Length: 190
Image 1 (cartoon, rainbow, N blue to C red):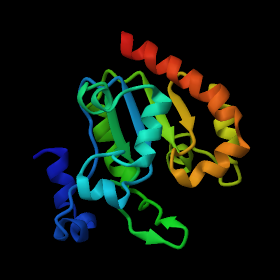
Image 2: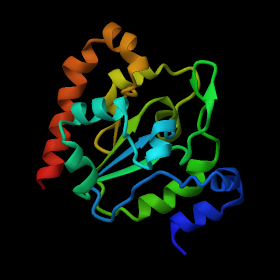
Image 3: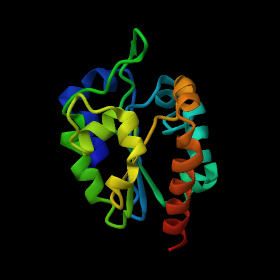
Image 4: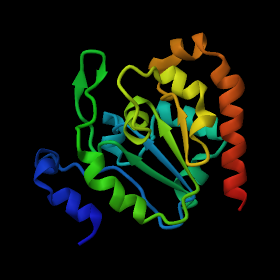
C-alpha cells in the first residue's frame, strides 16, 4: 500500500472518500523545495491540483517559476496541513483538522530526501513547524524570516484575501519576495 492508499482508507478521511475526493499533495523523491500550506480550497479539491487557483498564480509569481516548472519538474513537493478541502467558515475556509500533519507529514517528508528548503505558507504551517506560541504575530515571523533559514522560509498566504495585508506591509514584496526568489533560483540551479 502507498501513503495515498493509506490516507484514502484512513477512518478519519472516510467522509471525503465517500464524496470521491482524493487527498491533495505531491511528494516526488526529487523535490528540492517543499511548500507547506494550509488545506486545499474547493477549486483545488475539485481539480486535484494543488495551488491551481489565484493563490497559486501569485505563489508561482513570488517564486519566479512557471506552471510547467512548478508542476512537472519534480523540484517541488507540496504538502498541506490537511489534505482535503475542510469546508466553508464564516470568514473563509474552516481551519485544517488538528493532528493530520502530525500523522502524515513525517512519512511524506521522508520520501523527499533531497529537500533543501521548506516554505511555510501562512499561519497554520508556521505555528506548527516553528512551534510558535499563540500570541506570536505572523507578521513578525515573516518580517524576521531570516531567523528561520536555512531550513524554513515563512511567507504570508498568497490569497487575494491578503491584499490588504500586502498593502500595509509593502516590505514583504520589496524585501522578502526578492530574497525568496534568490534562494529558490539558487536551489533549482543545483
